[in-house]
Image (cartoon, rainbow, N blue to C red; front, top):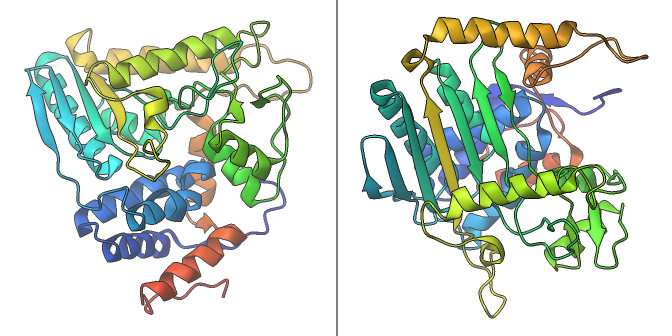
Length: 371
C-alpha cells in the first residue's frame, strides 16, 4: 500500500493474541492456533480483507452470538479410498478444512487423486491456505466454498449465491507456487467491508441495485447487500458484454460442488437467518481436491513445466506503460518478502477491536505499540 502510515505489529504478537482470544471464547488451543494462522496467512499475502480485519466480526462475534461452535465435532458421513463426506456440525471451518485436506493428501499419496466434501461448516478463511497445504506436499490443491448469498446471476438482481471462490494451487520450481485464489464474483464481501473500514469507495460496477444501477458508498452497499436490496456482480461484470455470464457460471459450479456432493443446504438457505429472521449457523459447504503429479510423469517434471509456463508468460510483450507481467501467486509472495520482518499492518478499526477484546477478556499480558 503506498504511503503506508499504519502501525505494524510483530507477527508473533498478533498470532499469540488472536490465539489467546480464540481460547477465551472456547476454541481448544490447538484449533485456536490453526485458526489464527489461517487469518495471519491472509495478511502475509496482502489479502487484508480476510486477515485481522475479519477476526472479530466473522469469528469472535459469531461464537458469542451462538451461531458458531467453538469446539468442532467432525463426523465422517461416508468414506471410500479416494473420497469422503464430513459433517463439521457448525464448528470452526478452518478445523474441518484441515481434517479434509489431511485426508485428501493421504489418499492422494496412495491413489493419485482424492476429493473430500464438507457440510454444516463455517467460514474457512482464504481458500489459498488449503490449496497451499497440497502444494507443501508437492501436490496440486483445488478447493471451493459456498457462502452467504450476495451475488446476483447475470441479468438478475437478487443476491442468490455466495462469492464462491474456485482456487488452484500448484507447485513449481520457483520460490513460490502458482496460486489462483479469488472469488468468482467481481469482488468479495470482505473487500467491501475493508473499503468501509478505511473510508474508501467501492468502484462503480461491482454492486448492482434492484433498478440495475450501481452504488459506490461502501457502508451503504454492505447494508443493502445484507437486506437483498443490492447484490455483488459476477466476475466479468454486469450483463454479458464483458463475460459476466462466465463468472456466473463458475459461481454456480462452486455452489453445486459445495452442496450437491454432500447433500445439504445451498444459496438462499445459507443467509444465516431462520424463517423468523433470527441468527442461525450458516451451514456452509466446502470441497477439496488433491492430485499427486507423481501419479502422472513425476513431480519434478510437473514443477519444471509449470515454472517454464509461468516464466514464458512473464517474459511476453508488455502493454505500453507497464513494466511487468505477473503470474498468480507472485504478488502475494512479494508482499510476504516485504512484510516478513516488518510485521502486520493494523488499521485503526482493528486497533480499537484489539484493545476492546484484550480488555474484555482480561488478556493484560498483551500491550500494543499503537496505544
